[in-house]
Length: 373
Image 1 (tube, rainbow, N blue to C red):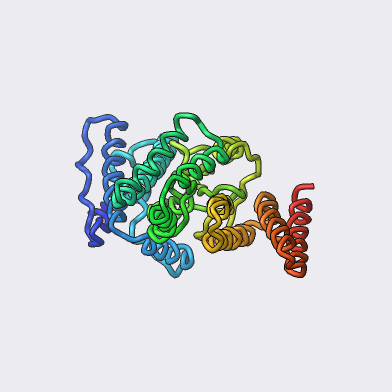
Image 2 (image 1 turned 90 degrees about the vertical axis):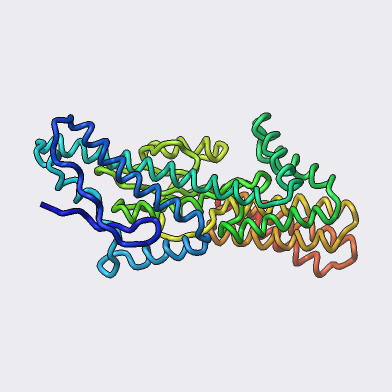
């Protein structure tokens, strides 16, 4: 008989799990509930411990696990399935019932990890905003409320943000722009929707993947142009854990779910190698917001501020295309920026510079046509 199992508590100390009570007359469902609640408690403590860790520490943990997975790496948590198989109440069941209960527990624990990882990110974003000045919180909260109450499109959201940005003085504008850099420094990524400082799906993937792997689940990255999630293998079935979904869904249902998550886009999700990187859409969204704000400064005759933001927009669009070469919207928007720069150069008599910009614009448009004829 196994005398308990080793595990790491939320303080990083190695402890032995206490044995469950000896077999009783309680039904199997009650025994299963007690077992699941204990495992959930361990997972909850583990995820809570990340509240006080920087995102860089989470990324290091992610990298350590997925770059050394295999024979060279030993999971610090025993696979709870092994412990379950040793429970007296479980061993006395027939094979069919054992398999059913094992799969049910697998799925319940996997969904619990999904929800706790989602809540963890909500807490971090809340703490991030709470640490800002009152007017900063009000600025973003007003935009969030406007977007949610009117169900705005992405373009409408950007327009709302831009109008509120125009109302700020120069000092407050700079603070708003700094918030995006602070967000990236805190979470490792730009916000998924910069206008509302929404959490980033890649950050959720990093944390959830670490927890899933520590508890013995096989996890893979799932990528589309505009979104990333993770695939979890449970009882021989493939499920998707997505920061925007309140439950795990079957992999074959995910393409339909993406249409809702990504505003009607229909690109097919693909399994990708392990990596922590922002999706192309996040980089694109940040770039387009910078482009919008650069136009605010240009209309006010503040060329230096406008050019600085436009350079940021160009760099993020290029990075977006490195992340996903076939991202048509990024090519079109980058081409539009180059074309407008060419027009400005031509108006100023800088004809050679204008030709260079026009050629870059044509290159981007040709690339867009190639990927979406």
